[in-house]
Amino acid sequence: MPTALHFTPDAGANRLLASEPLAVMIGMLLDQQVPMEWAFNAPALLKERLGGDPLDANTIAKMEPSALEAVFRAKPALHRYPGSMAKRTQALCAHLVEHYGGRADAVWKGVKTGHELLARVVALPGFGQAKARIFVGLLGKRLDVRPAGWEVAAADWPSIADVDSYERVLEIREKKRAMKAAAKPSQSSGS
Image (tube, rainbow, N blue to C red; front, side, top):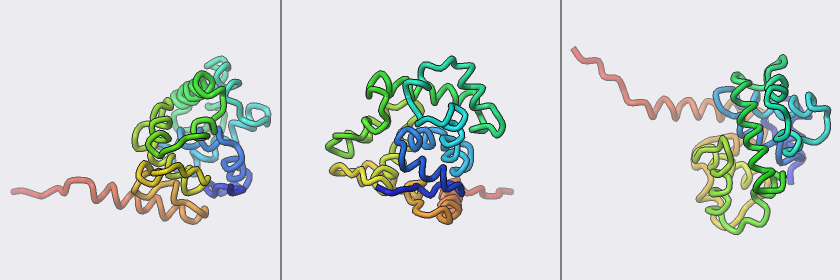
């Protein structure tokens, strides 16, 4: 297991992502409509604002929703959309409590196949098919969670799963932009 996931410029945040499964799961949840490093730095700020103890799904799930939203809204905000992302984080944690005893790593512990892993991740609140495939790739490439067939279930496009140093964040961002540009239908000018 790595000692850090180099998704942010902050060494402490990167160590947290590798050491606390809920941290990397929340980072993945928040990785939308903000830069990757912002999303993956948020778990460290969340941990600090909740008192510095390890992130705990039970604690977050039981929080008064307005209190969790206030934590997300405090400056600097944990996300561009702090209210909706506080709700999604709380829903994710409630799901983990209900289905996995509050343990994020229980989502992948004992999984036999990539298909089973992908199904478990897709079932998480806030994880659609694409985000789930990226997370399966992150688990396999960065955290050595490799049930049979995980490669087939993982994203087959450039993503955070391919980041092995912070310098690669910008490279992956550029590849994603190029892919989006290539996917747009070309606009022909007619006269």
